[in-house]
Length: 329
Ligand code: IPM
Ligand code: MG
Image (cartoon, rainbow, N blue to C red; front, side, top):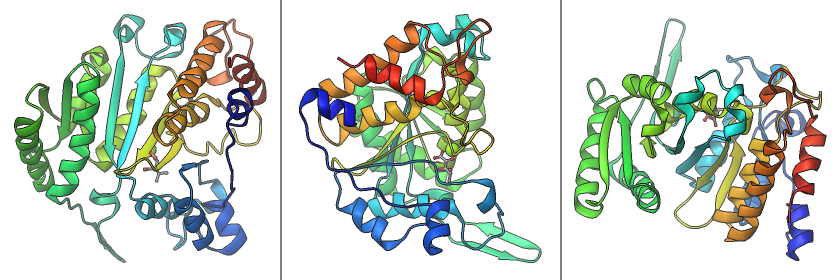
């Protein structure tokens, strides 16, 4: 962001706030009120991953992930865009056969502030429950976001649900059908059950354009499709409200196994900053420039360890970042 501002003559104001494990350590709260206030006060939020082994006890009453979920809710960022683009040079880094990766370019639109993540929870010694509920208007607004994207892309929308089992999914399917019929009849709509989607996304990924789905299915399927891009470290995401405010984060987590060793892949984070420039600051040229810089470094063979094939020179996080900054116009 700093490099973009220096080169393009913009002035960005930054405010750094704590969330997750760092906030628990500092003040015992994974999302301190000051952090929420500062995020609400900003045009956009660029987020670092929130967890780590020292806070990972799932039985703890205070957990880093609560901070992330509370921030998504507080900002009302219900639309999580997870674009999946393949750099042809990274085909060898993917566990999926190269011929299946040709022409893969999809956008997964994940509902982010509803469903089982936010339903009532109960727990006693021998039983537990998590409520999954959706309102029609929550489905309509996320499907609308996906439909608008599909219109500007290849006109194909795949809605993923589990309508053969779940009532929320039957409402999802009904709502999607009605909305697309009424307002987006130019689009090609397909419904797919989530288990079948898990298979088809890997087997014939190039057939997908925009995929829209509920919160938990989207969480799971996007980790799966990240393997098409070669590494979880490559994928950015944008979480948007119904205006221009957004929360931007790579789809990967804090990767505690490699933390602090200067070997993590910064591309997902840097590409998230590009999405921030585009969606919240309306700086399309700058966003395109950042994405082009990542692409040119990859094209010239720049590789962090997670995307390196046998004979590549491996760059550290700092070196990869410096190379991308250097490639900016
Ligand atoms: C993601 C993450 C989060 C989620 C976790 C950290 C709560 O997996 O953004 O995909 O499940 O939404
Ligand atoms: Mg996830």
